[in-house]
Length: 382
Length: 101
Image (cartoon, each protein chain N blue to C red):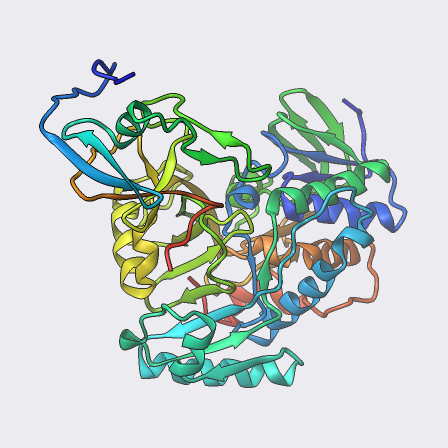
């Protein structure tokens, strides 16, 4: 292990790999990424793999739009030998109450203003896109054909390989035990494989972000929440878009392989770091999906898994410096959307560290917004 | 050859019953699996591989390997090695991953 680094990034998920890549591309030498397990072993590799621009806040719309523009060219830009499997077959957001439909109208207004090609659909129009959708229980829908999904493992691998080619050092199966602070500045990162002295640390630890921030006594207003996903046997292609509902608490897409992947959250979950699977999820998910998309009820289940959402009070990420320690940066609190914002996270954090002109002004996503009460609540989250 | 002993399933042979395989009428016994009845009738190719369309036959016989997936009464991906034969069943070779709509 190297004894010193310009920048140490903690976390080998999409945020850490994208940040490392962007910094290295801008000429920063001596970057180390520390990952306690394998690359994408955490929230990135456990996510629902969707990327959408249909958000309710301008900030999230902007982040998502830029990220999707990146994903459209990711294979070329990252000079990837493989394929990140980006498919833009849309997101169909379904509403089950009039109030929810009002929110969709609000959201689409914001989205359209920012150049996102989303639109409100009638139930008949929604049925044209997903013919077996049970519209009896719905009030309307919104749709954006440029939303889609891609493979989180291959996408992170593309960033990882590109960063590696640019000289970034990755240390997998290496756990951060402590971070030394001296005179209010980050001094070194202590791992189970050795110590790396550094002036700059990026916390991109996903579900474990609070554990890392606690090491420098920096208060982080986040918690981790278990979310679960199940996957069915594969069948021939029958559903193009991701179907998602906030009020019914579900998202469901058919993967390129043909299997259906669906998930939901449960905000009554204990706030700990468990990623075990539960029977309750299987039962409730199956009930809901059979009601909304009846034919899917015929499919057999293959497996299930869980991952952590790192939740902030306003369900938007936290980017930037902390108050307590110099040289400690946050790329945390993605509240379930770290994968889709991944390309921009790397851009934003690298610009903050290198004090460059921002591509997108994300300064409002600083940590002080919680203390100052400047929350920008995202209304559209599963 | 007719399978009468199975490591995990109990084949209690009942009366003779009729079913169809790709439209052709075949006889089997109540209490045996669909694949066992097909095998006894000389049907050795149960399906095909997804990518290269190579023949797939009776293999693990205990519901693990997916080599015997067939369309049964319109439902794809049925593990015929562990699904009991019923009178009048319509059994068909599955092409591809199966359609449910």
